[in-house]
Length: 366
Image 1 (cartoon, helix red, strand yellow):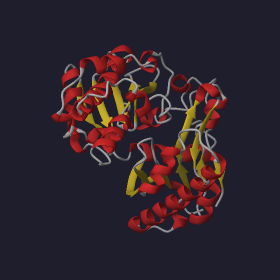
Image 2 (cartoon, one colour):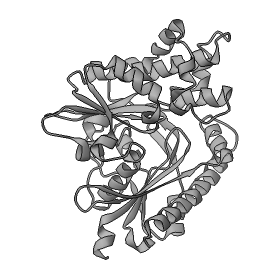
Image 3 (spheres, helix red, strand yellow):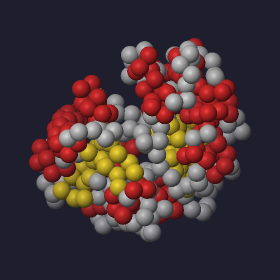
């Protein structure tokens, strides 16, 4: 093993937004350092097939296995393109940390499912793969998510300042990094997921760029009140969520059918913002600075609403901390892959509720 190989890891992240694969090359020699990035969007056919698998259907085992193979091939293509961009051979990479694509997340039933054929990915890339990070935490009684707070604590914690990192992906989650004391982290509610689904239904776009469409609507107070009554929003941490809790079927059940689409979208944006604000006010009230990351950090309308609601706290993005908002989670899974190979825990029991620290992930050698 060369010195270079000991340092370099690839992280692959595809989240609940189902928009594609975020890929990074990270040096973990000392402070995690981002060396190269790449994004490969999901084809619409793959995206629709993955969405369909979130609900029970006929022949699920065959569908899931075939989709796991497709994902492995897409991830492998992402890795090849990333390495070409970075001008690195596969032999320079010690391992790939691959999150896989969540299609079911049911910790209360003792399982979570992130699709990928990790053996196939290792074969296609010629690189060791670490995958299935969530299952061990759930086996230890935890939620299996969120897992990124341990990484956040390693790179974003700052003596003299109490920070909260808010990742707005399909689901929004936060990590509370106090000046002293234990880290707290949990999913706080829907992020982009409901907004994206509504935009796709009514405007045939993948998402509301910059929040422009939402800015054309008005908040519907009655609908917002019904949305905010969801039991998950009032549950105490540790907690994690997915499409099981927040989906269009749930939303449709709260609509009269006479709403203007832009007004519903604006109300969904308010839901995302209010869930984040309530979580911070209740569980992280002494926060001095909030740093956003994830796709929602690009939503200027959402930023504006959060700034107004949290005007007593500094609001910025992880760009200011040296890590681009689009790459934090992929970097985290590169780091989690390294933790697994070194036999070190990847979870924070105080975050997930697991019985204790656990080494996370299954290892598939090259």
